[in-house]
Length: 392
Ligand SMILES: [Zn+2]
Image (tube, rainbow, N blue to C red; front, side, top):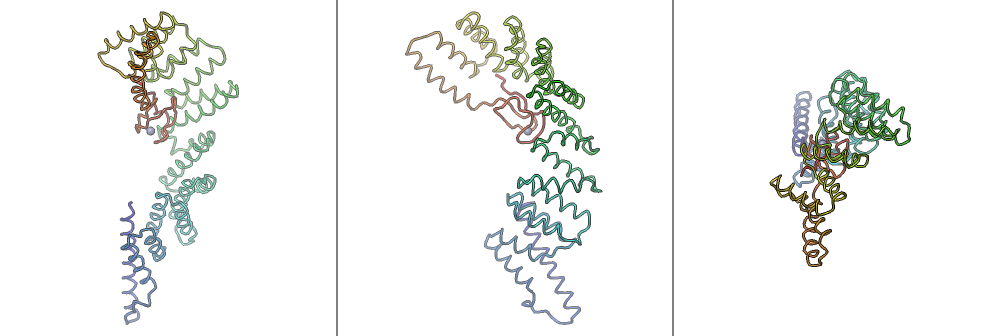
């Protein structure tokens, strides 16, 4: 709800209440109540003056003071608090929702709604402990809708606080268990736990967590990626390689993630056909750079350059990235200062292009990142949706 719409609702709600109040008084007392007797009337016009002077914050505060809290107006109070929160004014939102929450006359469902909004205010203010305490009190609310919102907010807190076990525990709730995307998230929580243990060389428990991850989401690429690292750590190179090679079968974009890893554990003879396969299935900057480097190391810069030129001709397109690789090789082959000056210029132009590039992109919301792998999207917070994105 936008600010102006909410103000209109407030003005109407107060005006209606005021008009009905006047009518009732007139009927019961049989006389006209002078306008000056009603302080509400004065505040109402003060609020209108603020509004006409475009002082919306002051107008809102004045109207909120005038609008009596009762079951009919509580939604407007809640909406106003939410508006403050969305504007980043969390202190005002907290004050308003706390004021509502303290009313003993509110029904239980309304109290729980206010409690949820107050928890959202605390969350927005970074007061996670206070938000968690409030939410835990209403996890057994009667309304499925409220309970689901409570559980989702608790998950956000646990994700933010990296409380992965708590996130797993709460995901066992019936309402969340039925959400397919939550099973994907649970797999990532187990991966988080496993990766933490892997850093401390506790591979046995880490392996159990990774199995749990795959049990919850058999397509979890991250679980395969971490299991491959676990095997490599345990010197099971063959198993590690085979697990890494399995990842691009799930999504070809992941060649860009596994190829650098494979290049450090595979011989030139093993790696070359894998790179050819990758360039065929998903022509990426990573694959082409590794392939050119491999040729350069074995046959020299000239052969590498010839390969790139043939590759460009085959592709029938000029990629700035291919041009960058070509320039690097030409510099290596031609020591002339004149050519170097010209190439430096070209390189600077291409570097500017390169700097605009990103390594990965979220397939859910389009968020671009320079990190890879990135398992949770920073924008939409989905798990496993940020994929490598360096296609030529
Ligand atoms: Zn996203």
